[in-house]
Picture (cartoon, rainbow, N blue to C red):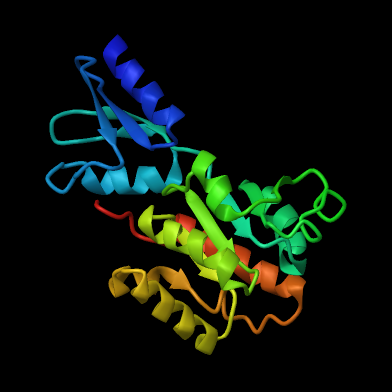
Length: 231
C-alpha cells in the first residue's frame, strides 16, 4: 500500500471520518475516497453509499475490472442529553446494539454513577463536553431533558454537523417553540425536518422503557436506512 495513502487513511480514522480505499485487483493501483467528498460523477457512487452505511468491505465488479473496497467507518455513537429515566433504560439497550454511548447532563443530582453504573457519564454542560468531543456524521443525538437551556445547544450542533440521527423529547407544541428559537438563532428552517420530534418510533410507547425502545428503533433505522448526504 502506498505510504501516503496509508497516512491519509489513518488521519481520517483518527478524526472519525469515514473513507474507502479502492484497490484495482488487476494492477494494484489505489485511490482514497472520503465520505465528505463529492462522488456524483463516480461510477461507484451507489456502491460507496451502500458501503459507507454498512461498513462492510468487499469486492465489486466493474466494467473495467474488479476492485476491492476497504471500508473504514467510525463506530456509531449515541450522545444522550439528559440523565433521566428514559436514559437509564436506553443506555444498556443501545450498548447491546453496538453503539458507544455518552450521557451528558449538568444536573449532578441526576448524572450519578449510582444511576448509570459503568456508563460514560459527563456531568457538565453540553457546551463544555462537545468542545472536546465534537459531534459528527456517525453520531446520534437524543435530547430528553425537556429543558431548552440544556437541550438546545446540542441539537443545534447536531444539525450543523450532520449527525445521522437527531431526536428531541417533547410535544408538538413544545417542538414548535423549539423551532422558533432555532430560527431566531439563524438556522435554516430546511434543516428542521431532520429532527425526530416527538422522539422515537410511533408505537404508542408510554413508560420510560417503552420510549427507550422507540428511540433506539428510530436510531437504528436512521443509521441503516437513511440516504447518505452528498452521494
